[in-house]
Image (cartoon, rainbow, N blue to C red):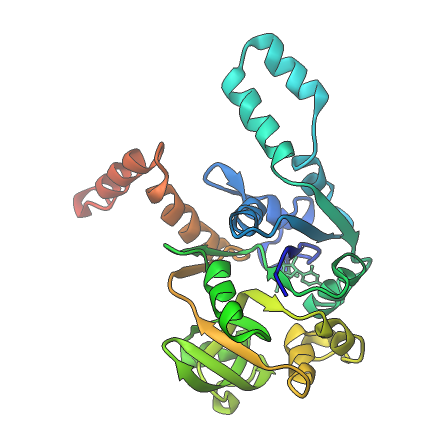
Length: 291
Ligand code: UTP
C-alpha cells in the first residue's frame, strides 16, 4: 500500500535543551533561517507524503501558529511593499495542511505515535523525529521508501554508533540481506554497551505499518518509565517483517546544544545565500594566530 501520511511527534519536553525549552519548543529553534521542524515537514512533502499529522502538547502553540495564516502580518507586509517576505510567509501557510493531535502527558515516543492513530487509521505511514536533522544527497525518508517498495513491512533508518553510545539508542540485531540493508531479528532500547547486540542504532526516520498501534497499546512503560517505540516494534516482530537501512548521509541530533550548533554550521555552509560568507568567516576564525 502506498505511503501518503507522515507523523511528526513534537510533544516531548526537550530537557536536554533546558533552560531554553522552558518556554520555547525545541522544534521551533532556528537552524539557519528555518525552525528545526520545517526540515522534517519539507522532507515529508518532497517524498510525496502530503497528509501530515503533528503530535503536540502544552506549550507548543508556536508550532501551530507558524504553519497557520496570519492575516494581520500579511496585510502589514503588503502595505509596506515587502513582497519577498510576504511571499515567504504565504508559502509557509500554503505549503501544507496539518492535522494536530495532542499528547496530554509526555509518556514517551511510543505513546506520542499512538496518539496519531485516530488520523492515520489503517495505512502505512512515515514517522519523522524532527530533531534528527539529516544532510543527504537523497533524502533519508526516500531511501527508506525505496526499500519499502521492494520489501514492504516496516523500515527503520539505522546508523553505526560508537560502542559506548549504544545506551542512548534503540539497537537492532541485524541480519545483512543487502548493501546497507538488514532484516531486523530483534531490537532493544538503550542497552549497555556490553549487552548491545550490535552498533546499529535506530534514528529518526521510519516507515511503519498501522499494526504498530495495536502493538503500542499493549506495550508497558520501559526505560525511563516511558512507552518506548522500540519496545512496540519488538512486539510487532512476530507479525511483521522489519528491515533497517543504513542510510547514506550525515545525522545531527539537534535536540542537544552541541549537535544543534554542528547542524547549524553544516546547513549554513550549504546555504546558497549565507554559505560563502560563513565559509570565509570560519576559515579566518580558525587561523591559529587569531584563536
Ligand atoms: P526525544 O528523545 O528527543 O525526547 O524525543 P524529548 O522529550 O523531546 O527531549 P529530551 O530527551 O527531554 O531532551 C524524540 C521526538 O519524540 C517526541 C519529541 O518531541 C521529539 O520530537 N516526543 C518524545 C513526544 O512527542 N512525546 C514524548 O513523550 C516524548
